[in-house]
Length: 260
Image (cartoon, rainbow, N blue to C red; front, side, top):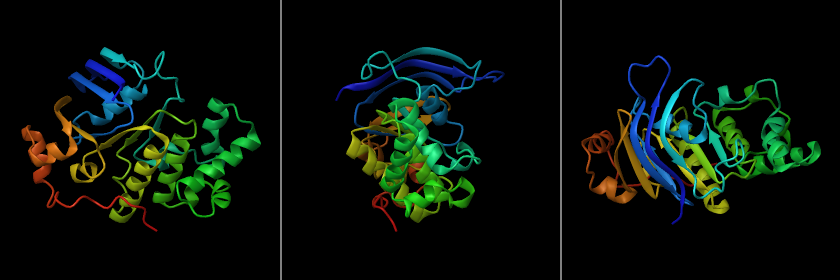
């Protein structure tokens, strides 16, 4: 595989923090792969995701090297990286219709006019398996369920046809059935479009069912990296073994197909 991104000795320190959130982190992300970033709360996994996407707060101290050999000249803001946040309720604008928000990326980055962007929004809503996409395009976020809002957020994230999709704890607030549907949808989309997926989660069992590779983080450092099946079957780091022990059964992968 060709490396989409190369990170070398990355360190991130938030303003006023007594210690770095990330320290000495080196990682290649391969084009077309599904990479799961695993870790407990506070491990730095979301900081890594936001550093990749250029979404760190202002005045955050960042050191190290981030290169994008798979993207000539580096990622274009909002165009080459799609980001799906943990809470779509806070990432979606409550005063704009769903269609306006999903179509915004197509208007801004693909040059579509208002009418064409509206049609593209409906197409994307249908693609993420939302019923009655025309009706939903005219609705507002508060009129949808949590699972529906997460699908809208995914549709908005892929509207500009990015090369990299980052899903940051997107299933943590959903029930098990909806989790499976959302994860299955993400896999379907990235495989169909040849995207790279960085899937951030604390749930090793969930990630191991879809990921090509798993990166395990603890205390702001990368402690283990390898093929998902190897990491689960023969963990090398104590932190990985602890994550595995926290789950009852990793032998049966979670359902990742679409649920009704």
